[in-house]
Image (cartoon, rainbow, N blue to C red):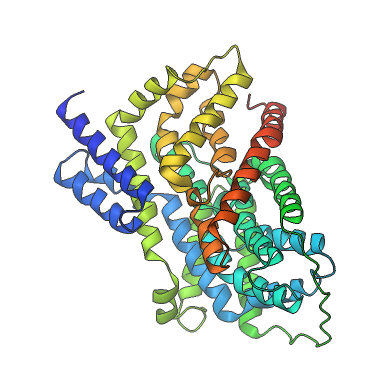
Length: 430
């Protein structure tokens, strides 16, 4: 290793350490990464700042703008409150309804944090109306349903999850692989979406029993206002174009950006300057840009190839044993999740994909897709910041979140991982 590679390794290692330990806010660490990489000249500026040219960055940005618009006009509140009227008939119906609501919103509201910020107060109000007191087992179960339903299930929808976007950006920057909406949905929805959702629902019903009192609302809802109707049309068109991106060839990021621009236009849009400044989380945008720049640096410097070669000496990867290789690659992602958290895993794992592909005999795309199930199955809450946010907003005790996380991850690896392998095999990925 020459001096330049040693400097690159130091910059990457310190950045990852700061993100993993949260010694500094994530966006400050990202800015320090940009500054250190440029001062020490470990790579050209177009590599270090390539994250800001990535489709993943602009999809995160547009997701924030759409989220602000949905909340500002009252459309999301109306939808959530209307659906909640039917969710208090029984405890399984209530938990399953919250999970379905969290999953459904992921199709039209790409921001995990935005969905959690929207759902926690709505679900909390619904719980109190149903006689479930704050801090009770039922309350904790509903808040965990919001957190896990928002984060884990959204991994099956390409634009709805920050780790997905980091993976898409890293795959584009590192290997010129352009991921599209429908193939992603087909590959990950049955296991990571539906079966994982069913498992989480059953675990909540079992671990946090409650007896809600049915809520009957006799009042007739007010008709949709003009702004709500207009925004609903924009969202439906955006969703339609996202779902058909493999036909028209336009990236989901640019579709989202057009929708965001419309929402920001004076007079015809929905978001003014003040709402834009207060609602768009630029800290997260900087963080995503830093992660994508880190991934590009790892590839460009050759560090990813070296790490991948080193991992192969410890992981049993072999083209003759596809199940063992599948299990090993999932294990590698889970180990990285301890250090990097879910948002950072794709930034380190994806640049190693080519060397892992050669060792395992899987295609480059298969190796990249295997990580999704693993980073969507955190062993501890801190590995998934949306879950931590939901626990904080919902006042869920840390020990309850840790216990639930360990149980769900253990059952997922035991029951769902083999099914995920079978589904990959059925689709011809392994």
